[in-house]
Length: 302
Image (cartoon, rainbow, N blue to C red; front, side, top):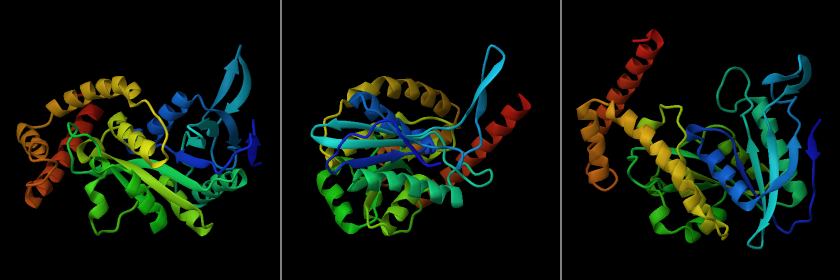
């Protein structure tokens, strides 16, 4: 078991773009949008049995057809003179009941993806995810870029316009990227492969919800456009952004009035400048309480 190739075109210095499900499904939406725009075709699949339990069994006319597993699939297209390989995983392999990749299965999956990247001659790797920040849903999400070496990070920072760069980039703190979107960078570093992760900002109060956030995906796709210098139509995402905006507005209206007022201060004071640490601590506690109560009410049907 290993890799099943459906096609193997000749490539010149391809770049690998990879994503798995995560908060707001920011990475998956980014690459699904890009794949569809490029008309990328199926390149290869990672055989699933080593990493996943069956998600179900397909039945036709009362007869079992096949076991259904999550896909771990590579796509390919040449665009604007750049060979682009896109990898998308339906699910993150994990030991136990964890949502995000963890343990030997995750590490082996990261290595399997990089085996393909090396075989195809990929020189650079970019993954995608969400950066949970104290922002507001009416503020255009910015993008936080991290990399496994300074040279690649400098290249990304030089190409990305200032208005897209997250303020997180200038802060001196230690952070963690959950799951394979981050793990892939570390495993790539062991192979001396340059890798980075582009993370679109998502408001902290939305990270509690099982909600997609195409707003952040639109920003990461815009950042990618500058980083690898390709042409991408961002307006195709506007309809999905509008649909999610309506759901966010409904959820936001259910917050207590004082919570809404303090959150709106983030928007009115230019992306959180002027918001006190005490107010942010108060918001965190009250938002957590709100979602706990909301969860309990839904469980009891009241």
